[in-house]
Length: 244
Length: 264
Image (cartoon, rainbow over all chains, first blue to last red):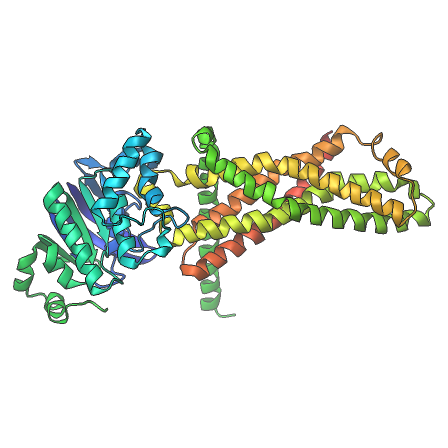
């Protein structure tokens, strides 16, 4: 379980997050919805301890990670997988090297097991035949699947997605959303999805939180979004995509 | 001048000073972390070998070109000057001191600042912009140990032989020019080089190699690590890395010479 308690974050004079509290339970998919540049991706980075809040605390499975040192954070981060918006694949490495990189880097696993896990992710992501290709030779959707495979290779119990369908064509978007949904059902994996596409939220998220002007204005089951009277939520329900 | 203008100027200066101090603090911590991760070198030996090739073997041509050109120029110019005083036989001595103590390491430092420093700044800056550095951290890998420490270790190891090569090429080209341009017998040239060189000359020259290695690697890598603002940001980080490290190489060159020459 990940918990953000009364988080405030400033960049210079600008307050990005104002007293934000959120809880993400295991085995659920929670979407964080909001316009671009509002601080949604920042929330994911806070969950991983990549950035520190000005005030408030972040708990991962009951451990307060807010004041932990970088080296103390590494084992906690491995409980979560992160899929970055731009995928953040290592462009000089092949797909199978990208998938196996962190296993070789951080776990003392025998090479056979590393290769077995890589092959498993290749199969799961439907990338057979592309093992030796560089990321630049793949389509956007395929690169996203590699990034998901890389996030899954540690067998995390929570996976964080930063705009998983942004910039993808409708078919690839559907495929990625289906992949996330399958993961949750087959592996009992929890997920946090940051997005500005409201259809994605209704497609797969059990719970949703809406971030607006640095504050959480909605945090409940996804279906209850329709009952919200907040003018911003009413407007996004009618517009569907937040091009703000 | 109106008070409001003075106040806004004062505010701006305070902000810039604060920014500068914060950057210095960050750079200091970054550098310390790079040094403290050196014991992990055995784990990252492949990265070390890659970097050793990039900053060492691959830099040989540019180091040779700069050393040969400066050695040749020195031989011509200093030879002309010494000829006026009838002291042409001292050409070997004067060229060797200039090359070994100052110009060999300095030119090598500037060339590597441009070559190795720009590569570090651009590569790490691009990794930062594309969130690859965040990805390393997110999956539990220390990016400084993985990306900076092997570069630092490789530069520390490779800059010394490159300095030796630069000195050797500079002196050889000077000897060649002395013989063919000034019609000075090679025996006379080398006879004024070897017996007169003292350990101090080598200490000054070779002490600069690790100092330059540290400056170039850490400054360029740090600038890559803090790159922001898309591809233009990578460009800015690369340029800043080269400019700052080249400036620091020039300053360090002066102080290393001064300190060693005053104390040996």
